[in-house]
Length: 240
Image (cartoon, rainbow, N blue to C red; front, side):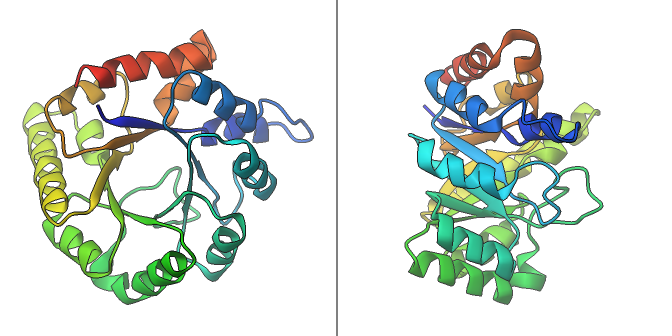
């Protein structure tokens, strides 16, 4: 069975919507997610600190019992943070201040050399590295070339497509990328835009070892509670 890593960024988004309050607490949400059976906790420490803050990451490092996955841009500031915090996994992602959420995968054709340096620095410190990439065979091959431990395949195009033909093509690209990455002996994760409906399409795609899901779980948790929201998603993943 594939694992579930729960992203708690949007608990912090809700907190940051009001100045001078310390609730809801993403750390508390992470604890509840683990109690419900999550295999890992994900946070994205952004340059503009729009949701998760440095203190959140430090506290999470001390209390997470499964694994702490730190999403971040490959900047010198973030590399220093990762080397200090030592998460169980770093996922390198592209980042633009103007975007509402991460819009696509890393472009390793353009930025491969710089990414390779960041990967080497982190791995030399004993921190495994995942690269968030679009489902493109060239990106998969380049991720392998620069010694990524894991690739996380961007599932946004599939999840956001409305027309069935477009959706089918997007999923076919995910399948091909996952199989190629697995063949190249990299770990394969997937995430972005996945929800309680779109996750069902992944039945039988055993190359994917972990799904990273945040927004849909947090949105459901607002209505039914964090533990139930996580358990509901785990139950769907068990059926894949």
